[in-house]
Length: 113
Length: 110
Image 1 (cartoon, chains in turn orange, brown):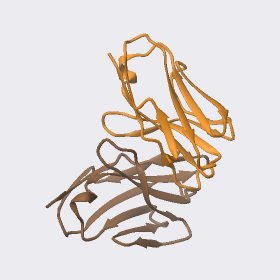
Image 2 (cartoon, chains in turn yellow, red):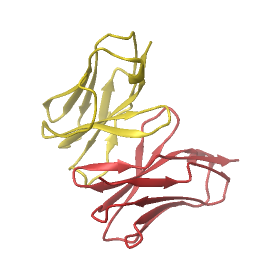
Image 3 (spheres, rainbow over the protein chains, first blue to last red):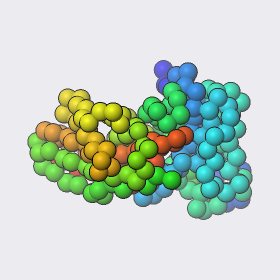
């Protein structure tokens, strides 16, 4: 049983396209996150949802739009993809905001060509 | 916001030696400090954590120490093995989120 699952694992697409990444957790956690990991391995927070409500929205281009239909799911939609969007995107969940460690998904490697 | 600095960025040790990774944080309100290990091509995984009311925590070959006065915390790995080779991230929690360090790439040479 995968605790935090992301799909797809790999995504190769052309500039200008729109794509979505899906994330689901079966841990019963209240909080979910999207992180971007660039080529230098730095983990940058993008969004955080607590019980379906957006609580963190870092400085991210508005081409990125998260959506949480319920507290077990947090999807990421990206419009008009650019070369600089190429990275690994990790979904994560935690029991409560800021007081427990994360469980990360396996990541989605996005390559924009 | 919080600023977490992590050193060194790369570390090579001989198998069996100890490895120490240090992080400093800026906001004294930070109260939870997890450490993550990320093997090549895999997800970060929580390996140990410490809360601000504790000075040290140990789990087999891994230990974490916290100095709240100096605002720094460290990861100690003893008797290193090749499978310890990975990127290690520290993090500090304040308010709603974690602030991650920039990572330390640890190589254990057999």
